[in-house]
Image 1 (tube, rainbow, N blue to C red):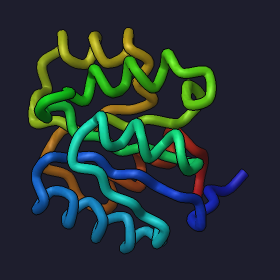
Image 2 (image 1 turned 180 degrees about the horizontal axis):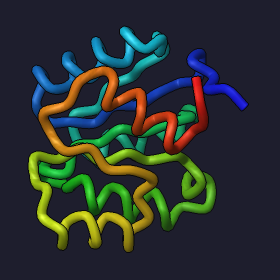
Image 3 (image 1 turned 30 degrees about the vertical axis):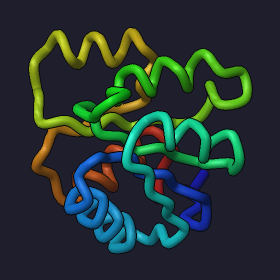
Length: 128
């Protein structure tokens, strides 16, 4: 099965520069239908209005953190199956464990490039 690069992708980060970087990396690997949210609450509202094939969210955000956002998604029957990749500057084992327990699909530590992102997406959605 190959990845459908026409799917809607939602990137969530409270740092505009990071949103732009992730959007550009996604574009490099073939994703053009990309929406942005600046926090978990906004992202949750967007997910309830539109179907996303993938969510890529930062961990460290205010007022709702990425891990809180992930837990909300996993508790929502309409959203819980959505593939979810967490992005963070923290590579601490306890963070990875916490994200796994919360139901994260994959985990990326900053900084990363398009090859890393493509590999993580392939790990979640299948090969390109």
